[in-house]
Image (cartoon, rainbow, N blue to C red; front, top):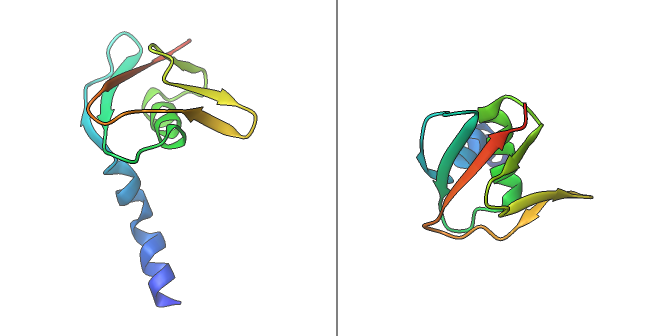
Length: 86
């Protein structure tokens, strides 16, 4: 039981570590790159949190929302940009 409690306590830090490079918010957009194994659900959550809205899009279309969650195929070493629609 202690093991699971310890893992849950560190989940926010593990999620943040998937972003390996972040730039500042510019023109309602944020650009970042991710670590290997990072999926679109994490990227969508990251954009929502950093843009402060659920109304956003990926400039390159790498991820998109479909029934059941955010899907796509991000790649290590690429830079991705998400922008607020507001």
